[in-house]
Image (cartoon, one colour):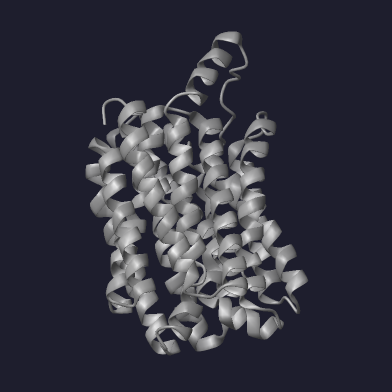
Length: 391
């Protein structure tokens, strides 16, 4: 093989990695869409903000089930075809959501979104080792999972920005169009990806059992506490800014956009440190999140400053947890359990926030989120020290 052919093959592999990363960005952005649009969706569909928040709860719950189910049942299928099918499903779901005449149709669309999220994320996260040489697996995996982290902090501001010009339905329509474009790119760039070798032997089962009862449990617990705390509060950040801070649409759109920028900064700034010491990096980031939510609840800090601190904290949390997970091992099935815990936490956090918003008050969700993230920091500091080695 000539140098030109080697260079061309390398470019093709990295193009595939980039396409998958854009795919993870697209599925997670689709999941996050209702956060910045919650008030508009509620008003248009004639439901309360808490009920509209079910559009966040539904895909999270479904993704939490879909990830392990697909990972354990689709062992004989080409991963390329699976990813293409899930992206096509996401396109349909977003288009249906954009045209939803009522909340029932919206929730049905969001159920389809959940299937796509859980399956795509679970399979995509482990593809680095399939697409590039062994020496580049870490970099490829970081790029693919970076799509999740960036989407988590940019999806809401992007949707809010688009909706400010053309309404909330346009944000879902744009996500649908992006999904269809990604379907074509996946077909063009991904090679056939046969499933991993079966690992059903007794030795493999013993290894998985030891792994499941080891430090991975800690990572999953921290994921549940932090992500549920974040979404209990952040799902209702727009109503909070409107009612408590008396902010208008222009300020909210700008503030959430800057929050997203801060999140991207937190994502990449935390990466190198988290690679060396994920536990301590995680604790610092969660403390930042807790401080920001408390500042908003106490109204002793300007909303924009608090959101910037919050964005830096949450933007880096995903990277720290992902690198922690990779250190503990896992493969497709381990990633599926992490994806399940992450999305279940999104659903439960959004659900709890909605109930608290309707039954108590909007400011109460900030106290709830801060309490859960504070507990997460304590657990990481105490249990993490005793259960994790080398961090």
